[in-house]
Length: 234
Image 1: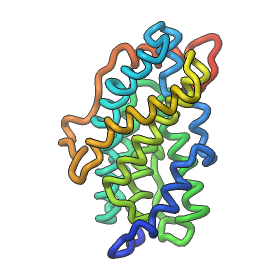
Image 2 (image 1 turned 45 degrees about the vertical axis):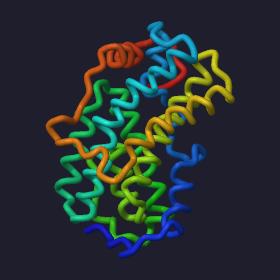
Image 3 (image 1 turned 60 degrees about the vertical axis):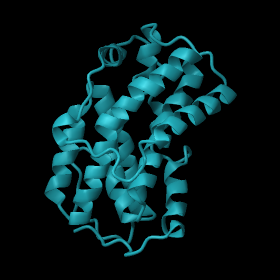
Image 4 (image 1 turned 90 degrees about the horizontal axis):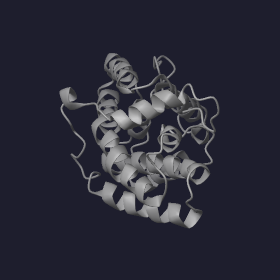
């Protein structure tokens, strides 16, 4: 059974957790992954700032809207209902929706580390010992954690966007001719665009509409798995 959150959450009851959870220094292993970005660079699809901005605003945004955000929100609802079977199903779906083995493994590695860290810190007193994710896919784990920490859905969506775009942009520093200032400018631009999708009720896609089809990204990520040399695991 999931532990019950506070009846009336205030910003002070969840903001400190969000700051720690979203911190890039949190030991969850995201630094080891480019989530297909390295493959896109090697294939010549991304060569500089303009292409990177378009990739974030179009391809990554669509993936968030059609996969990660719906999974996060559905996991929140399942956690609120105490429906462990639904959480297992969502975790299986999240695994199946990733187009390549390395992308599936990346989402599981990060989610597993987040869950382990959560249970040893903020969630150590929660009644979670009997529940086990089959894959620990990151958006499903995040949905459960944000529910348990009383994070409002809109704020949870903002955290999801920040973590996703920030991780890709940090990887871009090693892969593309962009500097730290350009990365911060790009992060600001894409988060401004993401904000419109963080309102209450946004991201609630029907389940049959979950999933994306992006041949360039999928093929680049697949080829990256077999690259003779690479900087990132995914």
